[in-house]
Image 1 (cartoon, rainbow, N blue to C red):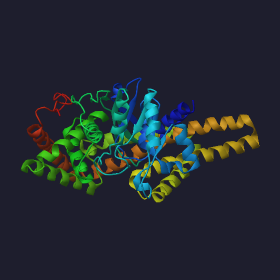
Image 2 (image 1 turned 30 degrees about the horizontal axis):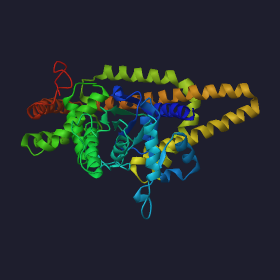
Image 3 (image 1 turned 90 degrees about the vertical axis):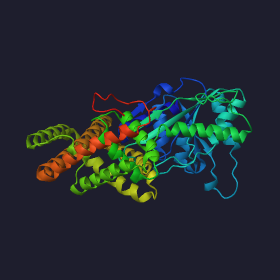
Image 4 (image 1 turned 135 degrees about the vertical axis):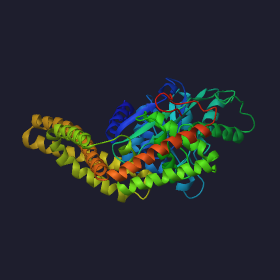
Length: 453
């Protein structure tokens, strides 16, 4: 019961923190039986929260034992069924995780689900880190006891991992079956040899599955340039899961073609195009269609109308929540030295500060005016909080439309030259992709829409 209540709370929190959470591959999650969820780990505690909020099953996560030192975190993690695991990097001398492995084995033996991040530590690198063998050893140990275990890979793809009200794609891959014959479904071979070799082979299978669900590149500059090329290549407004798959394909194929003269030339032009846009304060989406003064005015009026529509209800929430939001943003950047835990820090600060302020206000209303006024204040706070999010989003869009519209109208000559350059680049990127796309790589979308992938 406690887990279900916390899971519902986490779903609500996720829905507030992210503007959109898209889930793909949900049909790959078994409805019952022993399951191990394995995921990439780019965003600290938000990663397990997203899996808990989207997988439809109770999940017991392996968590580093240092998180259990504080009373509040220990209570929350305990209610979620998390199992403390000691890492060598957190302790002086050897560590003993036999009790943790036994606890996770009992979860699987009962037909439950557990989760683990084989990279071992959260990070903000542009690629998967080397996977540790813990998940494979747990699955193989369960299989040796006659239990069929399904290892479900989970790719977490954040659009802007540190930003409030961003988007995220949670993608579940095809399960890897580890049975009592030590066979892995989808790999087609028998796991033979000693336990270490079996764990290594299964870990490699898990890594291949995770790489198929995540974007991997040598560095973030490569990711950004290839993402700009991907934007030039794809049709307008493709779904997030298609966008992520196309981005993965660009990053997967790039290492094999990076030395080719035509590829290097096209990507240098893409990089120069990005630099010109940044210098003018524009974005690629600003050039996708002609935007004259009437359209700019119409879009500004539309966003302004929607902002003003929500503003009366949002006013109390803005007065209350705007200072909290500024304080959380300011404190979050100073309380954490690592980029990969920035979003988690903001989330934890929000979970601590917002309920505390609400409780203080509602307690005062109850003490001063009675229960009915306090109940009405609670309803007003909830509705005003929702309206505040709407106003902030519409206000941001209004600012973006004004900025882009004024720049497009004020820099007509520069924008016209960039549009011509973009059209030429789009044709060349499409041609380069068509030349070098592996024959076995099936199209994602129909060429009838614009081109295929």
